[in-house]
Length: 306
Image (cartoon, rainbow, N blue to C red; front, side):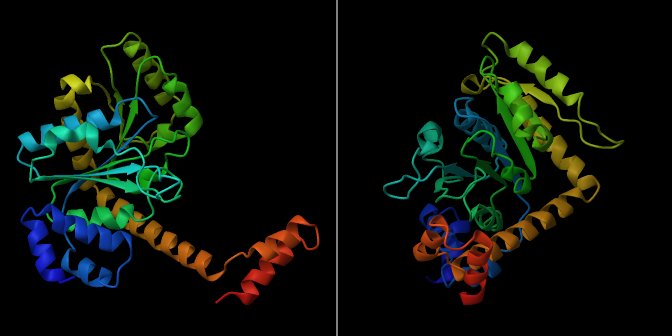
């Protein structure tokens, strides 16, 4: 790949060029360092969208795209899907719910397979977000898998995390169990035209009252939306902008992005360690047969690793 030319084409709106660069980053191609150097910088709004399956994440993301495009912003979306057990690719393909933006050159949507990575994201999502930001997108939306009680990883990636809930699905109680009460920056009660929307708002407020906040800390707003009709989108976009201002006003944004970079470094180190210190089937069989214990097997792996 000729990196400088591909980057220039991507910044000019060539989707194929964006796709080629993302593929190189995801696969850790040899051009990775050169791509990173050519795309550093940018100041995108990075929004994470999480919530259980069926709450309308993809529909809301499509509505958000429309709201930001009306403001003239370039928008990129990473829709993280479970990996197919057969092909290894993205299984759900949520892009079908965002087909209204398929012909817009200033919108880029990509489904990303988790490839077995837990936590609701794919392992290379952080690098992909930085790339899209460096290519001049004004907003980057990351939609998580929707795996339920493991969806906390998005908080370390996004500047602003939206937690979607829907009336009548029991999600308000599940949010307490999952620990996502603390990670959400905005609560979104989607499908608010259904019965039980006001009860869901009351449940969220009751949960928020249990969380202690010091002076000057962010207090999460609750926004009711009907995404497929565009209702509540203005309030949601305003809430995201207000949270961004709060982050930028006290250097919290820089601290959050520094912590994100540190987490990404640790993830790469852990991946490399797993590659170097491989656990063989033979060693596992010895442990399963009771011939050696786990601690001794671990010492064997560490001693024989690369």
